[in-house]
Amino acid sequence: MLTTIIIIVALALLFDFINGFHDTANAIATSISTRALSPRVAVIGAATLNFVGAIFSSEVAKTVGGSVANPATIENGMHIVMAALISAIIWNLLTWYYGIPSSSSHTLIGSLAGAVIAGAGMGALNWAGFKSIVLILVLSPIVAFATGFIIMWIIRQLIVVSGNSSRTKLNRTFRSFQVISAALLSFSHGGNDAQKAMGIIVFGLVSMGYQDTLDVPLWVKLSAATAMGLGTSIGGWRIIKTMSKKLLKIEPVNGFASDLNSSIVIQISTHLGMPLSTTHVISSSIIGTGSVLRFHDVKWATVTRMVMTWVITIPISMLLAYLIYKIIFSL
Image (tube, one colour):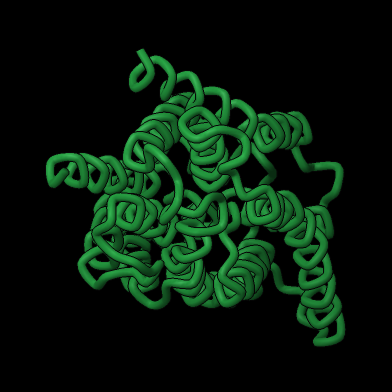
C-alpha cells in the first residue's frame, strides 16, 4: 500500500514538474517578447512566484480531488489515479514537443474522468461536478478574450486623452508596468495550476484510506509547489515561441494589458475554487488585447490550431486514460 501511494505521489509531482515547464510561457511570454525582462530573469522570477502562489490556497485542489468522483467510495481509486496521471503526462509531453499551448487542466480533468469510467463505471463519475468544471474550462477563455479587449480599449482611450503620442516613452513606461504584471501573473498561475496536482494526490490519499477529508496536507502543498517551481525554472521555450511570436506582435502596452487581465480572471477562478486553463486564458487575453490595436495582424491560423487543441484535449485525454487503465490494470 505504501509503495502504491509513493508511486502516485511521484507521478503527480512529475505531472506538476512537466506542467511547470509546459506552462512557463503563460506568465513570461509577453514580458520576454517586449524585452521588459530578460529570459533568465523572467524564468527565475516565474519559478519563485509560482512556488509562492502554489502554497497560498487549496480550494482548487479540493475541487479537483472531489468533484469528478467521490474518492471515499470509488473502487480501484489508486489505479484510477495512476492511469489518469500517465495519460496527462503523455499528452503534456506531446503538446510541449510540438510547441502547442494546450491545457494541463483540460488533460488532467479529462484523464481523471476517463480513468474513473474505465475503473469504476459510468455511474461512478459525478457528472454534475464534471460538467461544472468543463463549463469553466470552456467559458474562461471566452471571458478572457472579452475582458482583455475591454481593458485594452480603456487603456488606449486613456492614452489618447493624456495626449501622450510618443511611442518610445509609452513603450518604456509599459515595460516597467510589465515587470509588475508578469509577477502578478506568475503568482496567479502557481495558485491555480499547482493545486491540480495537489488535488489528484488528495484523491489518491482519500481513496486509499490515508485521510478522510479533502484537506490538503502541508507536505503535499510544499512538494507540489516545489515541483512546479523546478519545472518552471527549466522553461518551456517551444511554447514561449508560439505565445510570444506566432499569435501576434506583442507591444508593451498590450503585453501589460493581457497579463493584468489574465491575472484577474485566474484570481477570481481560484477564489471560487475552480480550475481553469491558464494557457487558454492567457492566450485569449493576448488575442483580445491585440485585436484592439491591430485586428488584422492576429495570426488566425495559429489561433485556429490552438482552438482545435482546446476542443479535442478533454475527449482525447478521456479516451487515452480509459485505454491506459484497461491495458495496464485490466489485463
